[in-house]
Length: 311
Image 1 (cartoon, one colour):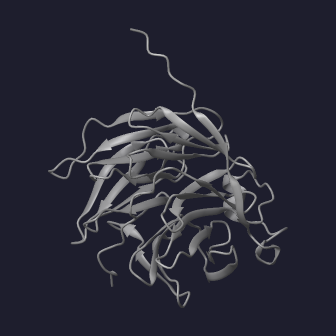
Image 2: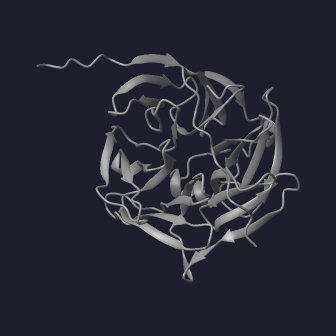
């Protein structure tokens, strides 16, 4: 029997909001942009979208160490600024965001005061390569990727789990550029964006705390591979793909059911579900400083918080 795959539906995103000019750092060089964007002019680079309970969207600005809050009307406020390179973000508790800071490790940011404190700077006195993204499960276990400058030339990126009791597990140490992380609804599988390998890996989480039979779930193409990930209540995996300016909406067999196209540049780096029913997908287009959105058929899975603030 020959199975003929139907081509995916294609839908354009729409612009929700753009970073106001008063916040852009035009003409200001940064060490991050020199290293990661070949010195190209970069007045911002958005990442890490996450919503609070009130419906406000928070995004990070990597090269200039900033976190912004965007309300439902698309108005921006600066929440915090520090000497770091913040990337992914999830709420640790009601007041604090836990942020993967490429320069400093894991940092906690109080969104009411803007105060920033170290959360986990090193492992066994060793600095991280450059942490990238993170997700909590329902028990408060924290999974995060340590990407640095790894790639096919140096497949030594890492995936970690930090348990609420402080136990620190190295789950993978052979990843060519680990990036976005997301969990399945039953939390038995972790999906991992592998940017420079141009894949999404499927990582089974076993009952004894180990992983096994890790495989390539999805393979993309082009100059930059999968970045941020999300999962909806129907089990579909949504993949932000910078370089192509697309978000893939994949079914359980990794077949694209829907392709969302950026209307504001190709650097779609990360995604988050929001809106009253959590059926609106928001995406950061990093280079232009734009937040895009698209309505989907199914809501995103609940995004869990940490068990408590670490001291």
